[in-house]
Image (tube, rainbow, N blue to C red):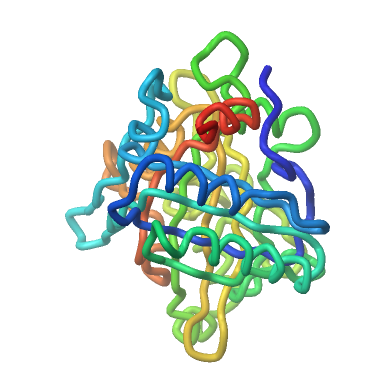
Length: 296
């Protein structure tokens, strides 16, 4: 299997920067040179890059990931929406020291400025116990050990082996309203206990809880993905940047269908208290495939 891009499985990743870009009109040579400069190694920081469908075809017309397609707006009959705001380019910078991250952010932003327009720029963080702003632990269901690669990487023998399909969504919480609920009501929304982080079981699990809607099987295959998103924000804009990697883009699509109640009409209760503002799919190639794309 091709070597994945640096830091894909480096945890915890206390600090992150999530950068989304639209391409400006530029020569292919200029774009490749800018990207090559952007992803040069920075000590203490991991820089990973992923490409939307149109950008992929521009940079690598010889082959493409089999399932790569744009994120389109999803709506439920009750009025819940996940907007599609597809961008061309995604850069994920993460590590343990904020100073190192900023060195990489400056490098990436300066290199890409002549050929891109910034669509989203978010600073992510992790707490000691991985709790998000709602007070619940995030990412408990993430695969562990070798199972992370099984969930996140395209397997050997398929186009793009060692690469990952990526989803990015910026979510904000109706935080005051959610925290005004009783703890029991909050737990029923999430499908796990708040203080002890124990998943509900059997009849105790509400069918519309977030866990129930996202821990699913399709044709007896668990739709496991590898989450690497974090809370983000400041005093005026705060929430969760949901980012995840998968061996198949269809896994994301099945999870979104389940959250939106497609098939059984049961809407993820979390969506009563959280709103999606962006949505994009990209493909993150293996390191050898990335180097081949950027070769001038």
